[in-house]
Amino acid sequence: MSASNRPRRDGRGCFQCSKRRIVCDGGEPTCHKCQKKGIECSGPGRFRFYQGTSIRGLSQRGTVPVTAPGPLPQPQSSCTGKQPPLNIRWQSDRPSARGKRKQSARPKGKTADANSRNSQHCPSTTDTAVCDERHPARSFGDNVSSPASAISLNEWCETPGSQADDETVEEVASSKAVQIYSPNSISPWIPPLSSGTRMFLSHFADEVAPIMVVLDNISNGYREILLPLACQDELLQQSICAVAAQHLALRHPCFRRSAESGRAAIISRLRRDAFQEPTERLFSASTWATLIVLLVGETITASPDYAHLLQMLFCMAGNTPDMTMNSVNQFLTQQTHMFQFLGQPFLGESQGLDMLQLPLDLFLDWTYYDLPPESTHTQSLGIMREAFIKASQIYIGRATHNEDQWQHLEELKQLVSRIHPDEQGSHALVWVCFIGAADSTTPEHRQFFSSRMEAVFRKTGFQNVAAAIQSLPAIWSQKDSGRWTSRLIRTLPALIM
Image 1 (cartoon, rainbow, N blue to C red):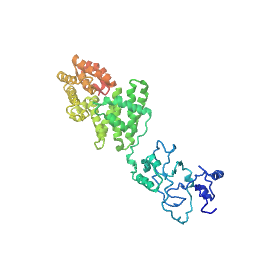
Image 2 (tube, rainbow, N blue to C red):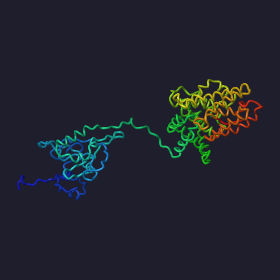
Image 3 (cartoon, rainbow, N blue to C red):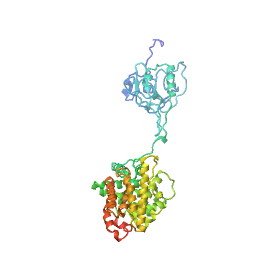
Image 4 (cartoon, one colour):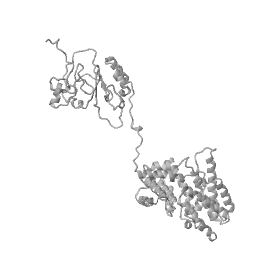
């Protein structure tokens, strides 16, 4: 039989048989000769899964276009019912003009044998499509969406196997923009929190934070500022958890031990840091916020140790270096003013006079909100500020003159009556009502102010309000023996606010 009449083999054999220089039997999916020798066969075909280069055939050592090697989303269906290949090259993409094979020495080295073992075949009824899964290693953040993913699987399956159509497909694919995710688009990492910590933070946000501000639905720095800081600062996080446990212990005594141990550990750490830490680290926003949160816990439990924390807070506010007035520092400053205005009169008569004789508008900045003038809250906040100023005048009058102040008490009663007990923000008037009740001499005034304090206690449940109500009979009984402002630190060892 002449060479011209010799039947041409359709299969070109497998890559392993060609390397062994034997005739492949063309078995599918793997040839029998490779199976006999225990060799993993890549199957017949002229594509050898080599990155960017054709190994066999007329286009030997010719450059083969390689699509972007990024991980692609899995299509819902495929033309063969199997999982579609990632990067597809058609068998008919050979050059249109056949030329002589270039005579060039093949470089010695490792072949794509190991890489071809990881390849997958996706046989079709008309053409043979082979996928290439060899991708170079990439670091995190280099996820690139392949242009081939922008073309539907039906377009791939219906594309004819001609060179012109292949060029059209490649042109469409190359026109798709490659999206690269930069590390700047990744949100900052948030450390994982235990279930117990999340429970305490949630309870603090829902039950404690609303009581510490006048209008909770407008703005609440305890929730919007301190809680995000607690996710980054361990000391502040522990203090918030301890205060939340103190509030839970009011109804569930099983939390009392953990609350006391947590509070003691935080105070011990603050004392240790005062002697060991540098000044710039000690007088920081973290320590500042921790002291404010601990004072919140003192109002919950009516602890007599509030005086030490107040002195530490005042020292912190007076020695904090100049910082930019951002939202955090502004909130901490306002809360410090609140504790100075409401807490310093309970440290002693002289300290109370020093505080209340200052310009009070500066220390009432925590009662200001960004509201339109026609808002109903704006009018209520104005009435509250007048009530605070009037109560301050009553305290100063009792500490300096010790005269009857019935007229001032009546004016204070009229101001407080304009705020309904169930109105939002009415709980902030507990300090005002205590000053009015302590200085009252008539049963009418005493009943009015004490009943308003009882309404606040039913709303908040804070023990400092209950302690203030219980101390009123002792203050009234000692009216003739001296000024109640001079005995306040002994009669009422709790922070009323």
